[in-house]
Image (cartoon, rainbow, N blue to C red; front, side):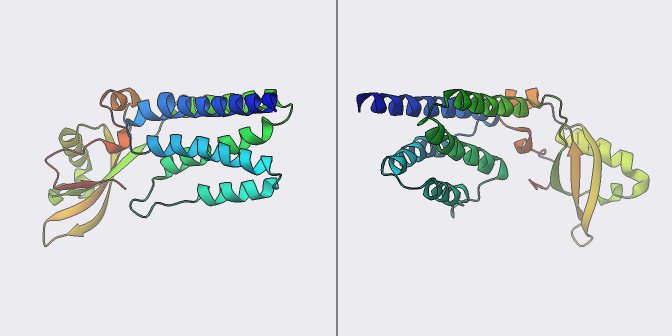
Length: 217
């Protein structure tokens, strides 16, 4: 009994340690967003202990995965969770389900390999190794004299100067001649190191004070 309890506590500690590595050293340094840190670290050990309880009373694994499926599609009513954070939440919930099932048998090697692969993959994706991501913003632009195809380069130069971003293309959407404004979607490549140095991901960088309105797509 003592051995089983020690193995269970060791598995719980390992599972929580992996979650802390993902949240503290992969997710948080990039986003600097503390809003979801509590959620991620609270969900992870809770799911592990729930799965351990289900196993101890000999309920089927199907019940555990049903619980996992319910939690994985949770949407908080107060604020819609972005896809990026939903992905992290899915991983944080999936880890204890996987670890609690494998840790009970003689499959420690599989547990270590699976956790290492997940952590390594998240680390690589967050640092964009081998990837170039195109970011975009939708802004309300007041100089509609520049939205004509003939003055496209002038439009891009003006957007670069106002936003401070390396805008390489822009798409003009709805035009409001009554207010002399147009909705323009700007596309740019923002260096990840610069985004991290400001404590924000590139998606949340301001569009510039000279623009009448800026909001994320």
